[in-house]
Length: 342
Image (cartoon, rainbow, N blue to C red; front, side, top):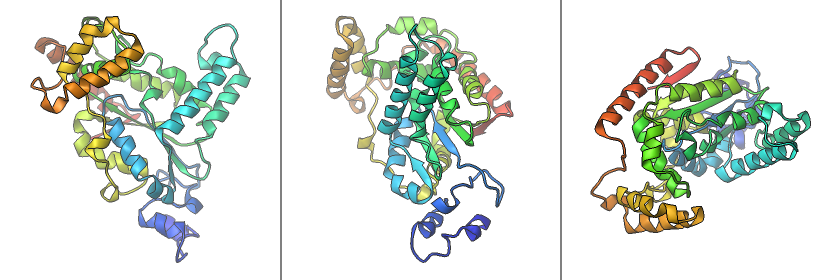
């Protein structure tokens, strides 16, 4: 309430100030104070990066944020749709590529001019007088980046691009983790949907053990953004923490938010569709796989499947990977630099 009393917009009978504080957020007059700060402390508005991971309800979160984008803006939070985020990230990557004549180098080894231009592209998203929310799982990488150890091995490339634009802003990075066998099986199906292919056998051989994989992802984030607050939750707990996650990202009470219909969320492929795709994938080009996968999903919808979810791992392998996951969660929970929601 102290923040509201100081806000010059609060006394207005109409306008964005009253509407913003109605939702418990910030209007533009007091957006320079983050919800992290002490009462009266003036700091730059926070930037929140929701980085997935893939197949952890990211699409649902993004659709919900999009439905409530106007209300978030009234509360002083700018949520950028996925297409805008990807456009700016692609432009930043192009600047890095164009600044190097002798092949690829890591972003931090690029010329200062190329890094500056890349930062300018990303600064288009970082409004000075708003808290900013960006939700983009491809910041970590592509689905097939987890086919072998370590998970998201190229994540540092994009995270390093964000380092310069975010250096003067408070940053929160939000990450959902998922049990290793379920994550890899779901990710395999997602990669097929995008035309990527390797055999399930090769994927499983490369992931016989996953010990420390989520720890590696967190360490990569910490290395690139050392001042960031890292917030993690188990995908298996999403029903319990959903309101907390949505409220953090939107600036709104979750109970007041509009929710997307199930038809807005792309369903996963059935085991029958995936098995058929595996049989024919070698003879198809990546674009052909994309459209064939669409056809197979229509022919074999998951709601009519008798096989549940696609799961290539044996029972013993699943048990071992789940044990590694639970052990890694205990390490995450004990870390002082990570907040684990539960």
